[in-house]
Length: 182
Image (cartoon, rainbow, N blue to C red):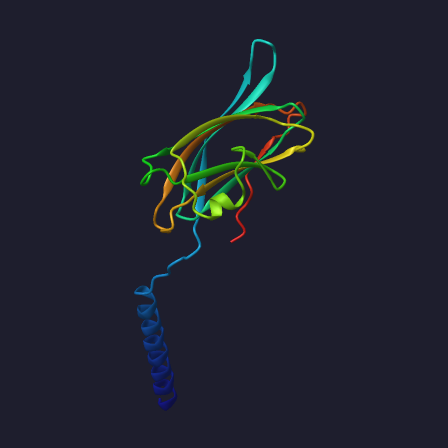
């Protein structure tokens, strides 16, 4: 009989401790200081033009928190031409999207800018359209970089982008979306 009382008392103490720990956790919230990004593929199209050249078009919707960066990697052959445009949906004050195309460490679009322009908070745009042609001097790896210049992590920008490039003859994808590591 006495043994049963100790067991009941122990169970009661354990349940009280468990309840107090769970109640303490419900009012806690976590705040992230690392900006996040997310994307969705709207549409992928394979097109053959009148000359018989096969093209691929990717339409993506990107959402970037303030300070976040999103990169797309393209694997291109020499003389491949890429057409791209983007626009921000319901842009924040004055356009906050900084966009660059890099081959290695060299910025190939927009010409005359540096890698530090995005980091310094240089003014961004609400839309842009460009074409580049891959060259041997730049190699085959190109990176499209979208950056939300807003300092406030709660300032989201949603970007719609369309990228058209020659389809890879081997049938392999030429566009890569790097994985997040956090």
